[in-house]
Image 1 (cartoon, rainbow, N blue to C red):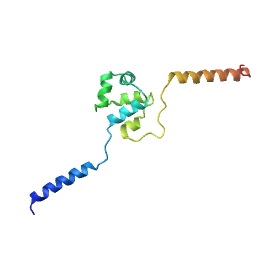
Image 2 (image 1 turned 45 degrees about the vertical axis):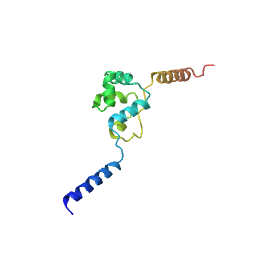
Image 3 (image 1 turned 90 degrees about the vertical axis):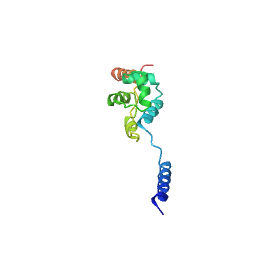
Image 4 (image 1 turned 90 degrees about the horizontal axis):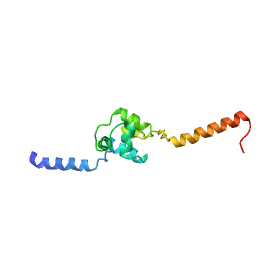
Length: 122
């Protein structure tokens, strides 16, 4: 047996090993997953992160995402830990929803009024 007989076997072995590796999910794919989970358009992500829609598109195609952009994305509920590491946060952020907060504030104000007057409005 010569080295020429062995080389093709090693090439076949490494090709088979490569086929059985788990598929790696890239940061850009996880960024896209979070955007979709939050039901945001690329244009909206651009607005949130202070960039153009084309820049947001480039992030989903593998361009580097600045830390500042991830911090802004987190403010609308993106799980940045998941985006960066692939491991979902045990306590994912709660998306900021102005309408929901307005309802909550109105309820707190109404409750405060009840407490201050000592009776509920009919």
